Amino acid sequence: MSVIDVKVPDIGDYKNVPIIEVHVKPGDHIKPEDPLVTLESDKAAMEVPAPQAGEIAEVLVKVGDKVSEGSALVRLASESAAKEKGGAAPAAKPDEPSTPKAETPAPASAPAKDVGGTPARTPLPLGVDFGQVHASPSVRRLARELDIDLTRITGTGEKGRITKDDVKRAIGGGSAGGGGIPEIPAQDFAKFGPIEAKPLSRLKRIGGPHLHRAWLNIPHVTNNDEADITDLEAYRKSLDAAAKEKGYRVTLLAFMMKACVVVLKEFPTFNASLAPDKESLILKRYYHLGIAVDTADGLVVPVVRDVDRKGIVELSQEIGGVSQKMREGKISPADIQGGTFSISSLGGIGGTGFTPIINAPEVAILGVSRAEMKPKWDGDQFVPRLMLPLSLSYDHRVIDGAEAARFIRRLVVILEDVRQLVL
Ligand code: CAO
Image (cartoon, rainbow, N blue to C red):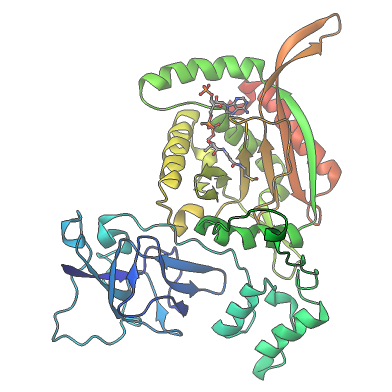
């Protein structure tokens, strides 16, 4: 048996992030992916999962401790640890002090992705965006449990801090975001027939509140259009045939991403976020696109960076690599942060249209459904053309319907004449 220190993985630019929950105690037997602690910055909360199975030998942190990438969290006794390639940092010798390590980040040479020899797994932001509110971790936790937006509560505590009572009052008064919505009454389904309770996957438990918040906070409208991609598809197929021999695929998605960036440059309000005070728009001069990936555990939206600077081949390889990584559950916060606009493509599965939920704090998302051969009137006769359905959901506080119609029309024009992509 060997003992390893499990450390905080790569959590992007966050430093000195408070621990708001410790999920384990000495003697606990844990499985890989079991949550060890929850961290919460002023922007997001994230869980650090166990990299492997074992017994908790020692908990090195407590609620309220501040940690950064590399800070040791727990000491894990694992029989398999020694065998794992790249292994974690060895535990302190028994005579070394075992006081909490939270304030003492480990050297940069020992990133948490080395823990247990596997990449850091799925410490996903919960998407909680509390802006600059003043509230203690326990109040934030309570707000999260009750799905209440703290930015909408006026604190009555010292220096305007939000207290637990403020949160509870907000539910009672129905003034909090979403908190005023009456609950769906619980029912005893067993009265009507046999049932089985199945826990939601971790991704769904984490992603659900993020989707719910976006749906409740953003006035969504979806505009639909379709693009004739007959010529584009012929070109894509020729690239795909060559790519298959080299071990990757060229799908429509890479072209969609390039086309979106061309249009986002022409319509900068779609590549923006509403400022926290909701009085201005933050326009982004970078083009990082989120792509929705369907995994066995649920939806993840990894971000492909600098799409404007990448070609179809590079993007195709990146889409293949990142979707495989997500499906293997090897997600780090850096993979899912910093998106400016998202694409959700269900075209490989089917469907004629849908309403994608905006990936807040972005302001628009493009849904792509399955291309279908349809008869199109060319002025003289019907001709068979491959038509691609597009659905653009947008934040109506930021984008007007006419602007959205122009955006999606422009996208259609580009997809119908792929030469425009290189202009
Ligand atoms: N119309 C017709 N066929 C399409 C298509 C479209 N719009 N998009 C993809 N296809 C085809 C591909 O060409 C490929 O066909 P062949 O294998 O026969 O050549 C097949 O469908 C499978 O494609 P794919 O889905 O593996 O690849 P992709 O690059 O299109 O998508 C990914 C990659 C990761 C986005 C996708 O696999 C996925 O996970 N989609 C689901 C996203 C999701 O869950 N969205 C809902 C979120 S809620 O808003």
